[in-house]
Length: 300
Image (cartoon, rainbow, N blue to C red; front, side):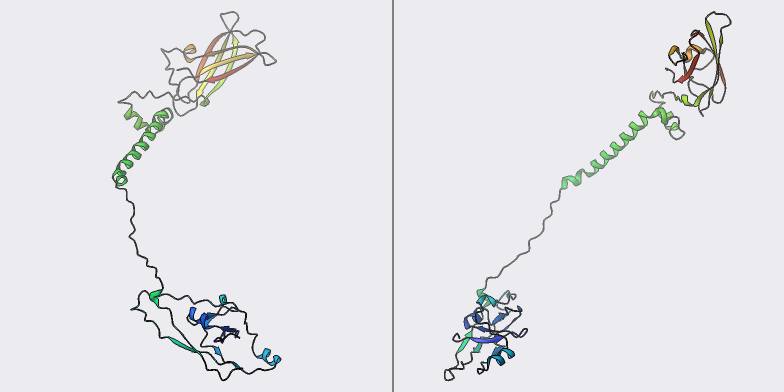
């Protein structure tokens, strides 16, 4: 048994501990139970020593006293430190009376005065609020109108390029034609002619010997422009082949080769009107028994 020590009991789990005056002085009388970690005042729950009882009864009443408990079991209760002495006055010193030991009843009870550590002796941490400064770029604000103007000009440039490079297709639509007609009065737009040979069909293909020239043939065609707009007359590609599909003769005729410019406008084939064409060609011979006609875009 250590001299001047007291026995205190945890109010939560009722575990008893032996506490020395030095430990109470360091922890300001507050201890932490090593079993359940509860924090309490050791002096308030001090246990008076009792007479020795049989081992069986002593074990049934209380738990075994942890005499070998290290000082690390008791920890100081963390409390908020006062900012100044004026706001939080220091408490009066508390006197703790240790009980006399059972085997020495004649010894006087020793008293230990535990002085609480003054708040002035504990260093305090002072935190000062600093103003928040946001970096502000005045140059970006001044240039924002120019940035907006630049974006608008870039968008307008892209739109103008789209309208110019696709003028061959956009001109023939009713939405953009008034715009192109207005602009093309001031600049040379050179609107390409709209050609759609897929809308031109051949209704007749007749081959017969030429009535005046030997070793010559006459081909009669009937072309119809089924598009909704006038377009140039197509180029005619005629090919002859033998029974095995091997080419024998071929020829490509442009509109000026089979039409009279003085009578017909080569760039304006009327719509939904049959156009009869007669071609005079050299005979491909006895081998050219297969023939094929292909309508191509003219070389304008």
